Amino acid sequence: MTPNWKPRFAEGLEYNKFLDQYASAGDRKRWEESRAQVILDEVQQRRLESFVREMKVLCLAGTWCGDCVDQAPVFQAFSEKNPRIQIRFLDRDDHSEIQEQLSINGGHRVPILVFLSEDYFEVSRLGDRTLSRYRQLVVREGIPLLDEMTVGSEEDMPRLIVDDWLNEFERAQLILRLSPRLREKHAD
Image 1 (cartoon, rainbow, N blue to C red):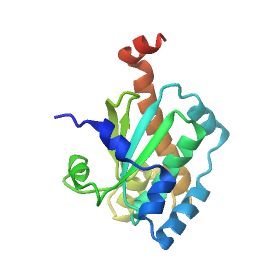
Image 2: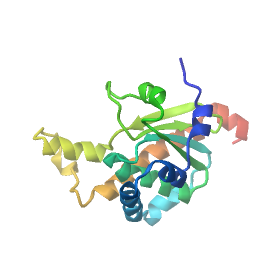
Image 3: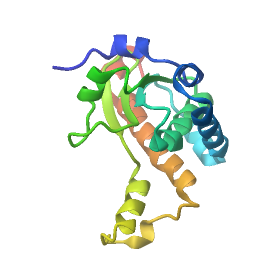
Image 4: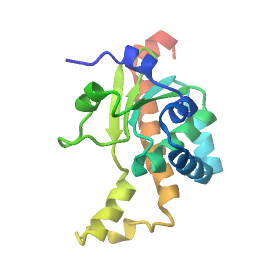
């Protein structure tokens, strides 16, 4: 059964309200420090500004979660660059039924994003860690990769996380842009 995402999105909180409600002082400091590190270069900014379809993005997260600290501020930076990207956050622990629907490999991972159309149809979902972070973790565990040159250093990780997520946001945007249903609706 396909979830009805509209009421869930309505329940979601904007970034700062999410932090106000759920973050301890220490958690908030980590999120603010991470947000300060999110720097979009000119090409990334132009890519985000080129999005013409409204995207609703629901993020299941936890303010205590290190992966959320690394990634959720990136989502906020994207939404600040283009108002067509609307992000809402749900706390994983307060939304256990959503947590179950969005489990990955049988686990309750965060952050998880659900990309939605303007009329709340699910476009895609993705979460946990980015490809760059997984590559780094695999090598750290001693598991060989086909091309270990693709593994970024910890120093490069903030930039790589931005790149990985921008690709996913663009992918969702292009799905929306090419949707026959939405093209007919918008006469484009």
